[in-house]
Every structure is written in structure tokens, then in C-alpha cells.
Length: 545
Image (cartoon, rainbow, N blue to C red; front, side, top):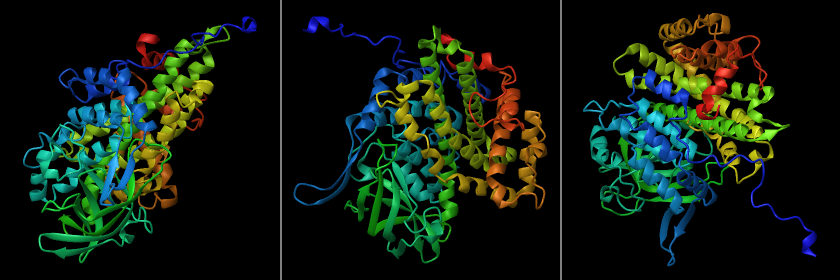
């Protein structure tokens, strides 16, 4: 009976091979050029070795396993004793161990000096850009730990005590007092159910006691609950204030931090996000009472940079995977990569990734220079929210379009695009949604109009564009709140065009035509790329072009 059945094929025909064992640095022309423009010695930073390690099949498999086996909350032990512990799959721990050894959580502070001025943003951004292509969820505690010192330095004694643990590179996942660990990680709890983004509506209270404060209340989102301490906003007698709330009290007893549950999220499944209650939890004040928002923004500015960098990296992975598939897949007797309409789509996606990569790296460069250069400080203040808005909002539709390049395979869970598509919206929400970013740009303009005008004029000069002709007029009365998103996006686009103009690839003209002209299109593959299509295709995966 079985003789009449066709033999089962051992290998499915006309499928692209797995996109593994790649070098996320060597194969990425745009990243290499952006890093070089910033003056970073890629060889000295071992960026090629990092790119090979994070593009390896083993590392990519760890990312898959960490997401398919998400963390679990253990509230109590077998005897009913309260634990409030988060358990992770071994793959997650392996990812954390490698990334902490590489210094993703601390490298900008290792040579910060007595003034606590972070250094090395561009080199770290390049690593983060590659890391997020392997697995994005474990980026959360790394980002918050790195950024935490931005706020902690406002309490110098606390910063000095924690610095050796924050800069430790030997990952220690054990739940025990931070001073007993080889390295510590920090999380953050800002938002509450009734306020969300409006943190001034927070009701969590802080009562002064000898040696600190007692924190009582709840948080709707507290990121990375497995961390060793959390920066928390609470209402002190003097108003909303930032506190450092550790998992263990100074006497070694477990602090009164109780988790309600872990959030079940659309994506970012390897990472734990929690609801939490504080019942007289011990905390130490960071910054002055009543200055909580100002203090926490010292941290948030750094995390926003990471959001932009990570989204650019995820966009790059989507593009590379789509181009890889198009290189191998044959349809209508030709490779997809050779078919004019597919080339138009891939080139248009590539243009967006080129702009995002150039802008994110240029912003990281500004962070490296802002302490000594007022113009770079003004650039960072104005462009950070615009870059986060633009890059993070661009990611979901771009990932979808790249997913479609794989056809039905892109929609199947065994392929990486489905997980990436679920991940894509997160960075646009985290650390301030789109409206928050647009309003932040308006605040930056209103508080320092001359500085903002100078930044925009310089961007226009570099990009060869007239800012007013593309809607970037900062004259009194010209900028209204209802147009904030338009202004923010246009500012981000101008900054990306300027960043591309600083390079030698000659893509700024194509970017300006496709993204800033009146003929700009909303769907990938429909834009006029000013003759840059072949050049863009060649730069995606040079060895496969």
C-alpha cells in the first residue's frame, strides 16, 4: 500500500538556509562606517569579535529558548515562606552572563572619573545595536543598570558605595544582599495605575526614618523585578522624590517588596515586568525632595538613547534577514533579490535602516561630547526625544514589511521574524510614548529657543536643506501642540539626513527625497530613491550582493 506514496523529502526545496553564524559587525556596512565617523577604533574595541559572538548559532538559539521559556514568579516556597523570586530559563542566564562580561551594563562608567562623566557611548551603542539582534529582552536590566548611575550620582555617597558592584562583570543571579554579590543590576519603578505617564499623580508615599525612608504604595509597572535594587518615585514630605529601594535592608533582612504578578506581554517575553507593592520598604533618597522628576530624567535620557539604538539594531536584523532570504529564494525562475519590485522594497527598507543607524550613532557621539561642548549638549537635549520618536516609531512597519519579504515563512513562529514583530512596538512605548517625545521636543524648544534654532540651522546646513521649507520653524507662535508630532518627526528626519551627509556613502540626497520631500510615500517600495537603489542593495549584505 505504501509503495504508491511519494518518498518524503529529506530537505524542503527552494528554502533559504538559517540566518546564523553571521558577523553582525563585519557584515553591516552602515554600522562600521558610523562607528568610524565617530572616531571609535573598532579593532581596539573588538567589535568584530563581538559581532561574531552575537551572530553565532548558539547565541541566537539561546535567544529563542529564553523567549519560548519565559520567567516565572515564585511568591512562596514549599513551606509558605514569602520568596518573591523570579525564575528564568538557563538560556536567559547565559545571555546575561555574556552581555555583562562584555560590559553592556557598565562600560560607560568604568572611566567616568571623579566627576562621574560617562564615556564610550558610541562603542557601547554599537554593541547594544548588535546585542538586540540576538535577543532584546535581556537588554532591559542592562540598560537600566547602565543608566541608573545617571541618577545615583546626585547622591555621591550612595553612588560610590554601589559603583564597584554596578561595574562588576561577573553575573550573579542569586537573590541575596547586593554587597555580597560579584555584580549588581538595577531596575526602575515609576508608573502607577491611576497616572501612568503622569507620575506627578503618584500616591506611593515615603516617610522619613532614621537612616532613610519607608516606602508604602504600589507600582503598575516595575521593570526587571529580579534586580538588586530599584529607582522608585514616591511622595515625600517635600514632594515627588526619587529613592533607591534595595531587595535587602541594610541589616540583611529581606526588604518589604512584594510582587503581585508578572505581566503577560505581547513581546519581550524573556524579560520580567511586574506589578509590585511596598509595605514600609526601606529606601534611600536620591536627589532633593520634590525633585524626583528632574532626578529620574538623568537616568531616562540615557535609556532613551538605548531605545533608539536598539530599535535601529532590530530594524537592521529584519532587513538583513529579508535580504538573506531574497538572495536564496527563487520565484518565477529568478532569485527574489534580482526582481525589480523586490529590489525596490528592499532598497527602501535599507534606506530607512541607513538613516536610523547613522542617527542613533550620531546621537551616541553627542552623548560622548556633551560634557565639553555646549553645542553637542544642545543637540543631545533636542534630538534625543526626536530620534527616539522617529526610530522607534519606524520599527514596527519596517519589521512588518521585512516579514512580508519572507512570505508565509515570515509569519511562522519557527522563523525569527514573528518574535521580532511582537518586540517591535516596545521601544516606542518604553521611556515615553510618541506623544511624550513630541511634547518633550516642544519643551526643549520653548525653554531654549535660541539653542534649538542653532541646532536646527546646523542640521539644515549639514544636510543641505532649508529647515523652514520642511516645517521646522521655531519662531514665536509658529509651533503649536497639535502639530508636535509633525515637528518631532521632521526634526528626526532632518537629523538623520544630516548624519548621513556626514558619511561618504552619498545617501543623504536619496533620504531627503524619499523622506522629506512633498512626494514622500507611506509604503516601502513606493519611494523615489534618487538613483541609489543598487548602492543600497549592495550595502545590505556585501558578500551576498
